[in-house]
Amino acid sequence: MTTEPTQNPAFRLFGRSQGKPLSARQQRLVDEFLPRIGLPDDGQIDPAALMPDRRRQALEIGFGGGEHLVAQAEANPQTGFIGIEPFLNGVAKALTAIDAAGLGNVRLARADAREILPRFETASLDQIFLLFPDPWHKKRHAKRRFVQQSTRDEFARLLKPGGRLRIATDVKSYADHCMVELSGDDRFIWQARTADDWTLPPADHITTRYETKNLGDCAPVFMDFLRV
Image 1: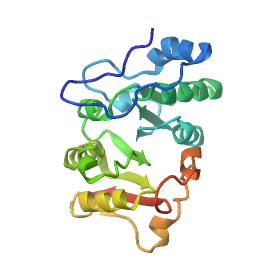
Image 2: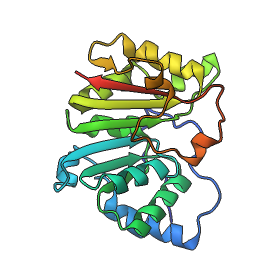
Image 3: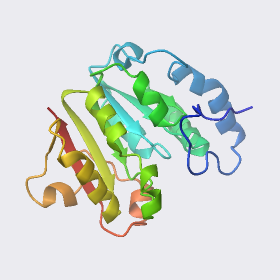
């Protein structure tokens, strides 16, 4: 039987944690494969210790169905990738792709990332991806957005000097929100020099099916920040 994602009473997971029933194969991967490539249930998390044969460590928060995560892991075998996603069906899709590709440089957690991030060792990541997070359009729901002062502080703590934070969104108000939260923080330097730097996908970006649906109210915006 599939367990619910890790949930601390201090946090409330907004939105669904599961959709349609899993296939028999997906359920088997969740029950048997996920524990083998999962994160420790408790204690500190040291990405380098989880994958000691990888030179760099990256984290994707809210990886959806895992398209971007898996493609990045395939393209960068010397980087260890950790993905955190609360939605069971997305985790199952990612497990299917990881298993099919035989990837050894991916670790997953079905959880609310806000709970997991404080367990990561300080300065343990080279890159963090937060791609097309739920924008929570309504003003009264803004506090539900993942990018807040608390998570900004976690990004700063977790990234090594010279590490990169990439946030992408197709919702103008969310892009504005992220810039307000991050552009005034002297721990981060926005890397854009021209309009193309934030209106065109970075060279290493992997376009997902969700992105191509154009569900937002603007063309995708890509915000890359350097941790100083």
